Amino acid sequence: MNYKDKILLQSTLTLLILTIATILSYIFKHLGFSDTNIVVIYILSVLIISNFTKGYLYGISASLLSMLSFNFFFIEPIYSFKVYNKSYFLTFVVMLLASILTSTLTSKIIESSKAANRNKKEFQTLFKISSSLAKASSISDVANISLQCISILFDCEVTFLTSIDNIAYRYDIVKEKRSITSQMISKEQIELLLECKTIYYIKNQINQYGILCLPKNFAVDEEKKALINSICNQIFIALERERLYREKESVKNEVEREKFKSNLLRAISHDIRGPLSSISGASEILIYNIKEKENLEFAKGIHDSSLWLTQMVENILSLTKVQEGSLNINKKPEAIEEIIGVVLHYFSKYATANKISVDIPDEIIFVPMDGKLIAQVLINLVDNAIKHSNPTDDIIIKVYVEKKLVWFCVIDDGTGINPKNINKIFDLFFISDDLPSDTKHRGNGLGLSICKAIVSAHGGKIFAKNNLEKGATIQFSLPL
Image (cartoon, rainbow, N blue to C red; front, top):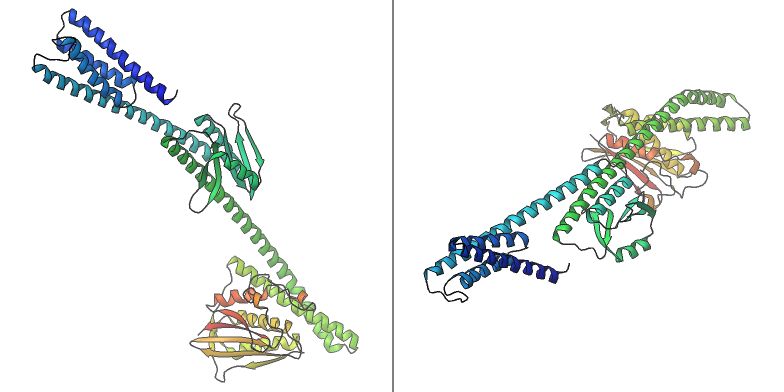
């Protein structure tokens, strides 16, 4: 029924009720009832009209017509709007005001009742949707429940667009069958669909999880719009909960994988440690006892490889401790000369071809540190310098004091660091693509990242830079 038909129907109803009230008043008049009873009949008719019509207009109009009818049909002279007895003017005013107030209060009560019913229905709908969504265990469940509830509520076809694992899906519910279908949808298909639908976004200021699509000709007033927005908020909360759950599960699985990997690496490293020490010791004995040059080269190769593997095992063990947060720093004052001496002794066996020089202050400096770990840092840094240098290039270990910080520098004359990689070299498992082919297999991307973890645990900083002429410098600080 359109707007004009509604006006015609309610106007006709108003006139009909007033006509009936007038006929009843005639009957009461002939039966000898007083004018007061007739006034009551007309006020009752106004109440009835206010109850069966919408808005204040019909009730106020009925009040005015009731007063005029009472004057015209029942006050001398009858069938005229003239009044001989002026006291009736007060009766007319009281009757009009009583009718208007009565109709207004009745309309307000009816509107309040309708609003209460609407609020109750909306609350029941939202409660049903939220209760159903609370039981959803996947994005598909959320989509299916949402479509079912909205389709029943508004009696229309509904489409829901969302993404699962970065793939766009379309969910549709057919009005007649209430059956739900789902399919993947492309970006172009989404754009075409949105052009012919009334859309509501499932989002907040940060995240968007989907789009709710209703028919283009779907009539939406303010009440429906508010209800749909409330439903969209419920859907958003359900999808947000699902996202957080998936992230939690992903993190949990990742933690389990990392824990398993760390345990495996630690177990393997511990098991390899013993045989490697035996291989290293045996190969060193062979070096001093073998006279043939060819066999001596084989023994040196075995010894060098065993030392390299031993260092890698130490790095792996340190890595597992860093990842588990169990890297214990046992700080105590250590002399710089002793730490440098440990490093030089190590490379006197491992890198006899390289020239490693030292530049440290003349005075004895004690620094709070874990001597074993800092020695491991310097060994990794010098080993890194050797990989990027020729045997004839100089490698310098320099130490100086500045502003209550002790700086350790490892300077080489090698190939330097690619500027695009200078901020990445301390990342875990990073291996530069521009390493020479004969050294690339010797790197595993662990050494520098472990150096950074150890230095950071000491409260220091580490960074790398290219030298002005050639080569690079990696330096770190430790607080005094």
